[in-house]
Length: 407
Image (tube, rainbow, N blue to C red; front, top):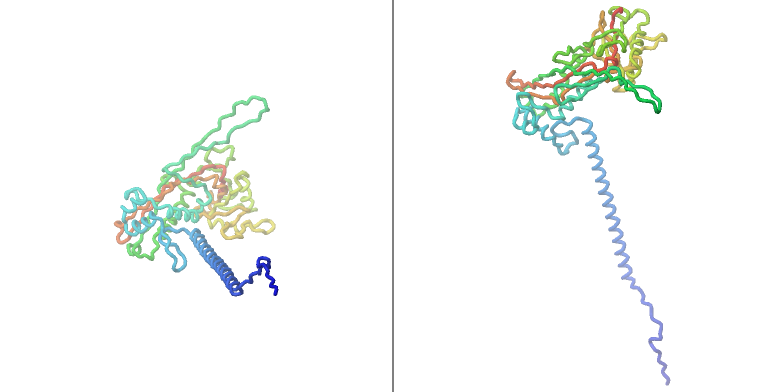
């Protein structure tokens, strides 16, 4: 019997079949890895949302804090927020000097002057006083204010401009006239305020001593400034613009520093026919270059008279403000109420019109000094605050006066 043998190598190879159990296991592993990746991404997204939300909350707090002056202690925030520490010199000044009178600590922190001259308040409190002065003092808000590091301030101005001429392209350049100069040195004086608080109030942690002190000083300074910038004599105080010499000559004929006045046409009153035309003449007496930024300055009693004036077609000359924070207008120009301006009376310059940023200069030392005095008026503690301030007319052409006189 024949037996046929076949070479095993000649047989086709058998394809291995995948193990179903192993394939299922690998699929499960891949699914788990995919799920883990998705879970990790979801966790990362959630963490990113949390971080963005926290960042937004912090930005809102910073914006809210920037909108108000933070002087000391903790800034207002949500319940549970960590307190925001004040600058060391501010905290030392308030808690150490104002409340307790510890002068050594303040001197070491701020390098202020000695107790004989008071201590310079930190710039945060000084800035708050400055902002309050700008809001309260009417003339300061429209005049030019310069900060100086010394008691005096001087400025040179030309009287009549710099001469010039016309020449051809190759023509000789003849010498022009030399301009005339005048020196402005605003008279200065020491402005002071002396508010008092009991020691019991200072010991009370709920008493906001820095806000109270800044407000008291600012109000006293603004009251004294308002009177000096209008009627100051120039002796140990600023020289007010109404204290400047006046004449009825036009700009090119008056002496340097003289203000031009216009008569109302009647002693102690407006003229009887078309009184509103007097205000129109006053406005156009000011050169066009100065009218941009000009304003009327007068007190409330005078403004009450003017608010009743109407044009020929029945429209009021005075117009109320249409937006918060914007002044009322008279003939299209802002109205600044300064109660130190005189009432309407015979020969009284009761109305001023001009560009005070060009016309009036205020020079002041930047630092306010405070001397704590617990001895003079026990049981009260006085805070003697001082600041040097000066002022005078800088450009007489930029301010015009309406004097209630016949001529």
